[in-house]
Length: 103
Image (cartoon, rainbow, N blue to C red; front, side):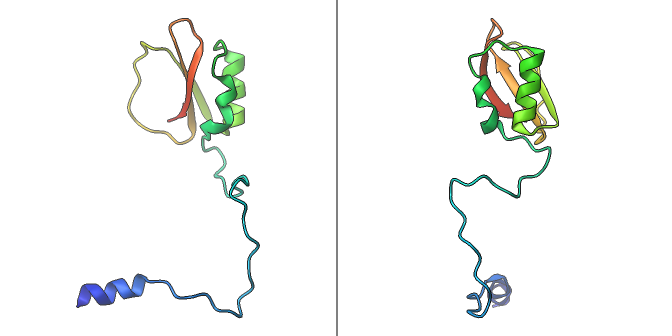
């Protein structure tokens, strides 16, 4: 009974018809509430297939909106902490970019 009453406090109510309506948001519209400095790897996929370099790393960092960036080779050891403000440029043995991800 107590749980039911607590859960009822979490439920939402129907919006008031007198409240002003907000404009609908398009599904493909870019998020306007993006957190500055947070990585968005989707914006840096242009780098896949290119040769990794300091210049490319700077471009990836800038386009992804990240504060930090690093190049990772196939045999590089990395720590397992996830950092939402860092973009990783993963390469194959020849230095060609194979994957862009955040963390």
